[in-house]
Image 1 (cartoon, one colour):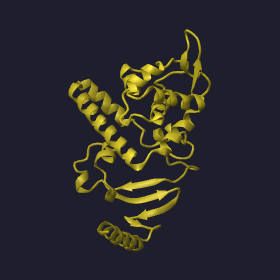
Image 2 (image 1 turned 180 degrees about the vertical axis):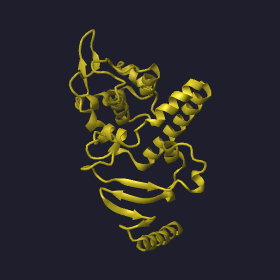
Image 3 (image 1 turned 135 degrees about the horizontal axis):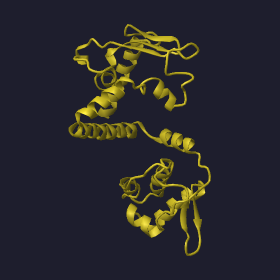
Image 4 (image 1 turned 120 degrees about the horizontal axis):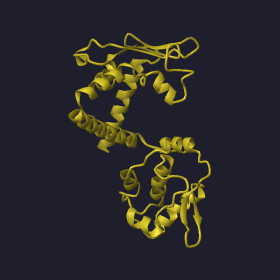
Length: 245
């Protein structure tokens, strides 16, 4: 069963670019749409003039962007009356495309994306709560009680369930001990919501990674805090001096 792509998703794909005039941006927008399945194999793209109009770029820029996708083997151009640019039907290495895309993201871009997703998720949750019935609340509570997305479910999504996700013989011993008795954790409702929304860095007491204890009772065992503080203060002086110049 093919996933349903809503109209809004396609409108986002062909929305105007903020920094018009870059063929790479045109190509990246279309690559993201193909990788995420918004544009399906065999689907015909809008014409070059239509792409240029929608993206708010010059015709040559849209043409260059399509050329980048064509060279990458993601689209093909067919001539004739029924011709145009089509998403290729050959097997596309989606995993490598997504990995490459993530590797090119800067920390600022990742932070911005996290802010966007957080704001959207919060608004969606608030809207859902306003419209939810008592039965909806009961079903959600039941689902949360049996959810495993924070452990084995997350590992399964990464195809690493044979290595991580649960405490079993033969798996990596990855354990984080969190203190739920702090003031910011009070009152306590649900372990999942508290880990996401209430837990702070200083709530973590002990961390074990692959059987190696890296923090014990809030003491870092693999880093020298004194050296880190000394280096940080040294860089602080360099930054202040550079600003004066």
